[in-house]
Image (cartoon, rainbow, N blue to C red):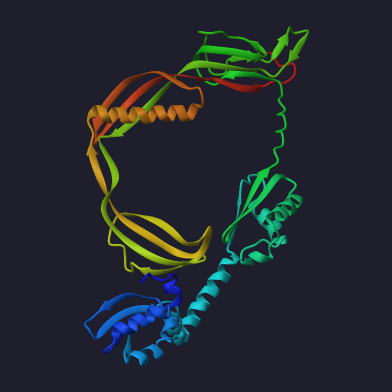
Length: 397
């Protein structure tokens, strides 16, 4: 017979029927439109079958008529589960309390974070949000809509051009876009541009003022490059000298480079600690004891529980302590020299700013001592050589 629908929801029973007229009993079930399935003959006087729970109560007249007896072998479905759960009152009460607690905890705001602020302090933004009822451990249903909160915060913080409020689970993010104000124009006093080092001029561009030198001119530290005085002695005007001047400068470096390179690597051994996270607290569950490694690095991974798109304030945290060891690699003379020179070149580029170019390098002296290579290296560098010299009225060049 066809398997009826929703058997798990309605409940099913597996029966053992015995008697002289088992076949007649099954025929009567068909006549009375009582669905049975999985009918299994176990001999001439015995059979097993499945039927729905409500139909069990209709079998008594049919059993009397055929002289058969029945015995329930198995009960399945939601009605029987409900009966078993009803007998476990403490379990049901605990389950209900758990879900109620989970619902209440997910209805709280656990954290409020601020993003995008630079000039506005985080404290002032959080203070304004608190005045509007937005703060940690506030009920979500007591908050105004996100649009209303944004407008209210905009009124309290006029320094911001836009404020957005976004709620994701138990986290509220306040995104701030600060109003851009034009930077005040700097006030310059009349000045010369002078050389800050001995150099050979490679490039000069005078935006304002009178250039005193030209390309390929050798200058000393303190020489005027672009003058801030225009005209003659009788008709003199002081201006702010502006421009860009580059020159070749020589830098001498004392370099020491070790012949052995040391690096830290993982050995593959690790020791894990497991924590239960509740809000801002963590309770250790596993991995007690001291770290068994003399050298190690620790990484932390947080895995909060989620419900739909909400992050719950409950989760797990794994702390992995990984053993490390120091490896030593012996370098050749060429590799040690290259490493030392690369470090000096990086120092030059970082020290003298954008547009600096290293044109050439020359090793003046080198020696090996105490496991290191010692070198004296001369670098020829093209760099900005201009610095300001304020002018006082009636001061000449």
